[in-house]
Length: 142
Image 1 (tube, rainbow, N blue to C red):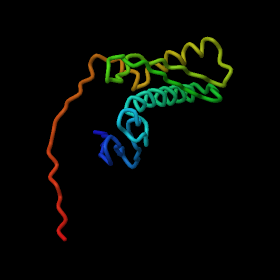
Image 2: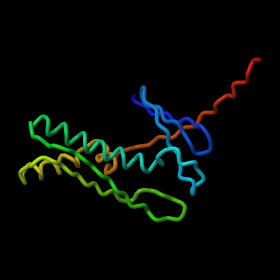
Image 3: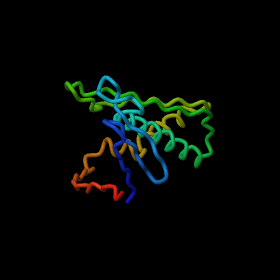
Image 4: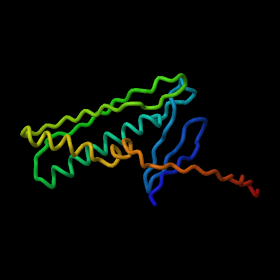
């Protein structure tokens, strides 16, 4: 099963490992972080933006439709509860450079909603299972 591993570097700064890739996630300074990377909610929006872009591009490639430039911007509204930044709404804006017919534009919009991240965010059947293990401290043998 694919996985992502978050390993604490300092305070709220974590290095995330996925396959051979690494990136830093952190909280902004006003939340007690050092702002050395995006916050988790921003990564969620970035996942939706990139998944939408790739899904649209793969579909257009199969159909041999020229898209030109592709940009997907995702804005999100937070739930508004004090102390939380839970995304409550995502607005996905797709911008394409190609001169697509209205029919093709409509189809692209439909396909965009079928990207895997979009489907997970709107699914009622996704389960998250939490467990806890203690990490044993490794002491220097010097």
